[in-house]
Image (cartoon, rainbow over all chains, first blue to last red; front, side, top):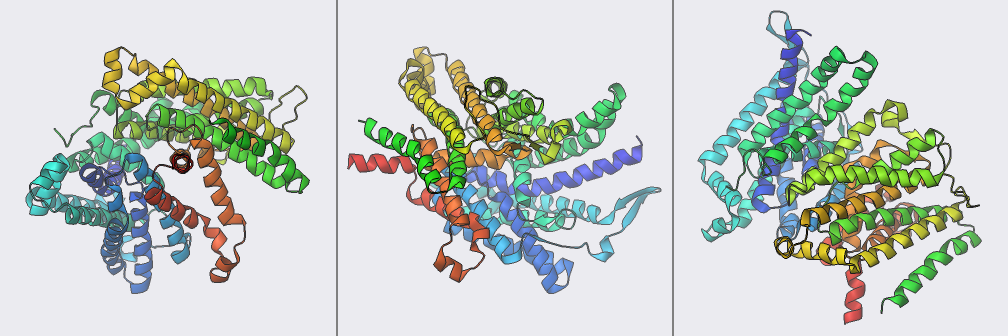
Length: 305
Length: 321
């Protein structure tokens, strides 16, 4: 095992973690502020990817397509919130699970009717090559771009939540909803705005990952669970928790996939190591979550003190 | 008071395959068996979720464990159901014991998420057992042997075995709900702190409820694998847990017949939209059957918004009014 591999995998882990953060940030806010389980959050990610694929094709420009996909998805998210989801805030978690599960079915089929089951989205030619970071160390330039955008969006979100009036309302809502209401925060508008921001973040992740992964119906369903793992580790309602949790999960998952088979190979027969390594790697993040909950049942950064 | 609807249901369920066979609709006997198996799985979840008040989002872990246990035994040549099915229940129960012991330390949303995470773990583990098909799944040579002159390969016979097991499970659930243990579980659901103060061993009772639910879920899994002669990692997928949960919510949380009603309604609805031709809809959209899930989703949304307490509630309300 070389240092190059380790460095490369660290960057991959960072990239995965940042994209997870974009998904988890919206989810944790909706969860923390509105006390709402939104299983359809992954569908917004799918919607963002499909919007991006369709708009890139329509405009002929990768940048324009991605930039247009973000407000389009945010708008779709806000419409969903206004039309349907706000009826569910007062209901119990079971009703929310049932309704948003149903929403997954509806959105999956709607996407299939409009765009088909999958849709290609090619990398822009200028970004398809590798760049040389250090002498002899090449890394795909597109992945670097994803890392840069992910960090920028995270910073933007940090400023938005930490230093604006909207952010203050968001934090107040997450810490104590009734008190925020009593203090005159317009909860209805706030919820719609938060939902729109969450959808926009989903779209950024969906559009950026689309050229690396396949744009297909159902793409949001597996990553949704990983995003849930992230927010449970981080503490529901906490943006900082989502950030730390996402990077932790991204690193554990990526490094686990590379290092566990190698580590196991050191003291196990090779045919067993090659079978057990990937299996252990794919459950590593769930073990991490169970471990965190065992010691800190409220996650690492509980939003409600 | 309850006997007449139960007798009606029993008469309907017993006569159904005979009527279908007489009409040459043997396919529907297989479909009805699937409904019964899902009804059993949903009923086992209802014990945990409805009676025990534990919102488990990982019930597929136990159904899947049962399915895989029975399938692996069958693939290894141990075909008798008298070994395979109890083994499926045992493995599922042990798994539920381990998962439950850890999960029950948390509560609320965290409990939902940790049960979900455990089931996803099983999903990825099953994907990596290459010896038994890995992600492609395991095709079984045949169904389990029941012995006693009962041939499970026969669709009608299989149906009656599934019906008998479901009937037994419903009877046991009804008895359980009326027992001391059932009352205690109910008291814990309503007010855990008070139940603990009275002196009930709350954690142990909840864990027992979780384990029994898991074991019955394992039996449903064994039936499911035998029925389709096939098992793959998707039995563990979180959407499977979600489907079972939907059945319970749809049918009626904490209602004896909730799982049965929900399974029948959901599978029936899926089948109706996908397979039965609706002329006016076909005139509008020729390919509508490929998008059956759209209809299922819309109906489920309507149920949440307009019948929030499930189908079992509709029956009760009529009787009260």
